[in-house]
Each structure stands twice: as C-alpha cells, then as structure tokens.
Image (cartoon, rainbow, N blue to C red; front, side):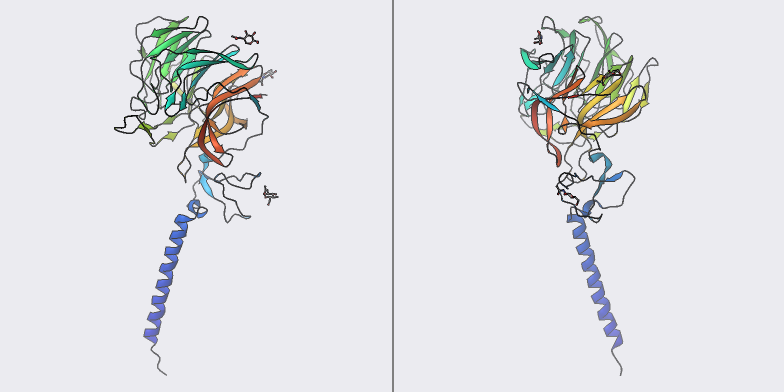
Amino acid sequence: MVRPVGKHKSAKFVLMLVFLLGFVLFYNFFWASSPYLAYVRPKTAANVIVPINPETNKSQKGETTKKGNLHERVLAATFADLPAPELKWEKMASAPVPRLDGAAIQIKNLLYVFAGYGTIDYVHSHVDIYNFTDNTWGGRFNMPKEMAHSHLGMVTDGRYIYIVTGQYGPQCRGPTAHTFVLDTETKQWHDMPPLPVPRYAPATQFWRGRLHVMGGSKENRHTPGLEHWSIAVKDGKVLEKEWRPEIPIPRGGPHRACVVVNDCLIVIGGQEGDFMAKPGSPIFKCSRRNEVVYGDVYMLDDDMKWKVLPSMPKPDSHIEFAWAIVNNSIVIAGGTTEKHPETKKMVLNGELFQFNLDTMKWSIIGKLPFRVKTTLVGLWDGYIYFTSGQRDKGPEDPSPKKVIGDMWRTKLKL
Ligand SMILES: *[C@@H]1O[C@H](CO)[C@@H](O)[C@H](O)[C@H]1NC(C)=O
Ligand SMILES: *[C@@H]1O[C@H](CO)[C@@H](O)[C@H](O)[C@H]1NC(C)=O
Ligand SMILES: *[C@@H]1O[C@H](CO)[C@@H](O)[C@H](O)[C@H]1NC(C)=O
C-alpha cells in the first residue's frame, strides 16, 4: 500500500510547529505574569533567595510559599531584610507631631527635634525637645521664618547648633542657602554666611574647629553635588567671611550619615538622585526619579584625602540623623535600601547596624520594631532611642507608609 507519506509527515510537522508556538506563547505569558517565576531568571552572584518569614510562612511580598524550592523567588540581594537578632523595644511617649525628613541634635540629656514634613503638603517650623532624664516632651519653640523645613544639614559643638541650607516648604520645593546658628542656652538664633549654593540634605559635621558641608543634591533636588566647603566657627561665632572650598567628596548625593569620631570625618551610605518637582506644577508636586542607594563609606583624616572604608552590609540612605556613637562604634538605625526589583517600590531597612571602629567591621546587632527611614536617634544611659520618620506598611511589605512621631528605646550591649 502506498501511503501519502509526504503529506502525512508535513501535517505532523505543522502540528508540531503549532504546538511549539503555543508552548512558547504560553511559557512567555507565564514567565511575564507569574509572580513566582518572574524572578527565577539567569542568576548572578548578586542574587539571593528571598527569606521567608517563619511566623507567617510568607515572603516579604506576601506570597505563601510551598515546600521545596519550586516556588522560591530569586531577587536582588539588597532588597531583602538581613538576619538580625530580636531586641526588646520599649515604647515611650510619642513626639507632639509626626515628622518626616526632620533633623535632630542631642545635647546632654536633651534631644532637639527640628522641622520636617507633617504630611507631604505641610511642613513644621518649630523645635520639640525630648528630655531623656524624665522621658517627656516639652519646650517647643519656633524656628526663624527663613529656615529650611527639611533636608537640613545640622551639627552641634555641645552648646550651639549650626543649621545649613535645606528644602524650603512642602512637596518638592526649592532649597535655600540660608544658614543659622542656635544658642541652645538662650534660644537665640543668628544668621551665618549662606552656603555658596543651596543643597538638599548635605553631609554636615563640625571637625577641627570648622563646619564642613559636602555632597547633597543640587538645586534641582536630583543631581548629586560633589562640592565640599568649610568655615571656621567658635562658640557660635563665625570667624571667616565666606565658605572655603575643600577636597570634593568621591560620591555626591543626599541623606548620608556624617560622623566625626577619633578625629576622623566619616561619611556613610546615602544615594544619588531623588524625587523632583513635576515640571510646571504650581505646588511643586513631588515626582519619582531614578535613585541609586549606596553603602559606601569614606573617611578624611590628617592626609586630607578620602579613604575608602568597608561598605555597609547593604545600601542605606536617609540616615543623616539616625546614628549614634557608642563605645567606639557607630550605630545606625534603619534607612532605605535599593528599590524592590519587582514592584520598583522604595524599600525601608529595619536593621540596627554597628560599625566597630576597633575592628573596622560592620555587623547587624538587632531588628527595629519596624522598618523606618529618616528616623532621629539619641543615646542615653545605655539606651538607644529613635523617634519620627516614615515606617513600613507592615512586616510583609517594606515600602514606606505612615509618617510617625513614635519614640522607642532599647538597651544596647556592645
Ligand atoms: C510554617 O511552616 C512550618 C513548616 O511547614 C510549620 O511547622 C508552621 O506551623 C507554619 N507556620 C505558620 C504560621 O503557618
Ligand atoms: C529634664 O528632666 C529633669 C528631671 O525631671 C529635670 O530636672 C530637668 O530640669 C529637665 N530639663 C529640662 C531642660 O527641662
Ligand atoms: C560600653 O562599654 C562599657 C565597658 O566595657 C560597658 O560597661 C557598657 O555597658 C558598654 N555600653 C554599651 C551601651 O554597650
């Protein structure tokens, strides 16, 4: 029998093609739409398995995982919470107002808490004071009308608080170069020479008799500035007519911790890029732009050259007032890290980091009660305190939500 072999064969071939095409389409669709498979992609060394919260058996995005690794998701390492010991946190009296991107300076037993957004459309222009001796808030007083309301550079020499530049007004308004000194004993404010150009959230410290200001974002709120200036100050008095240019910082950008310890100036973490005002918006409405978060650490010492120190365990920004020096260690609470690789949402940090200056090593010494950014830290009687900032949506969702005034503390053992 002669069978129409050729015809039969080609029909089979067409059928196979259709099947293959169908499979490819289905697979592509599944690839793109499945939350599980979306990130099981070519793996690089920088990827990790998302940890599953043992209390809920859910990943941070809230998906319940099945046994075996079929549904394990692979995400960028920097997104995940890092393993951290539990700490016992005590809730103290909340601040009179919630604030985001405010500033804080501790002088002896008092934490002066300045400015900040109450909501994105409302900014504070006063100071609240927390007394660590009796754990109460009080002593509210006003800031000068011309002083910035967020993204301030601020430092103390023990009595005077020096306040440089920052954002003036709510949403994503422009910065001011206006600069002040506050005498905390008399509550008197005085002007200082303005910064040569305004900045958002520059790294600011008092070092060897000079006020140092560096980095931050430029006038458009997004472009990192590399410039570094200093001016001589003593007992609240400015000794020079203008700011002096200093060695530029290796990486610019806002929201870093800037610490002077053992006579060295250290700059930690931060980011390049930030939200910007929407072009033409009459209210300067904030609109998201790309930002990259860093864990870099740089140090200036006698050589007046920047040296690179070990990086943080993960990128960390929004930590300008979230640190304290404890027993020759720098301790940092929370912050923000790289955006979620899938949802692209901002991701908050919930770790308490330690940089030990004896060993020059980073470690994670505990978990905060929740993830939080731009929190304001103080240290008293062996306790680390933090207040204010913006916290996460909950244990399963590390993106930012509520602006808080909460005050918490835990006993440290370093
Ligand atoms: C999570 O999974 C483990 C192991 O399957 C189980 O023992 C535990 O009870 C689960 N916890 C919850 C909260 O479902
Ligand atoms: C802080 O509290 C202590 C104890 O109540 C009190 O003696 C001290 O005067 C307070 N300091 C200020 C500045 O209010
Ligand atoms: C700092 O070190 C001293 C001496 O070792 C110790 O007694 C103290 O508890 C330490 N403080 C903290 C906050 O760890």
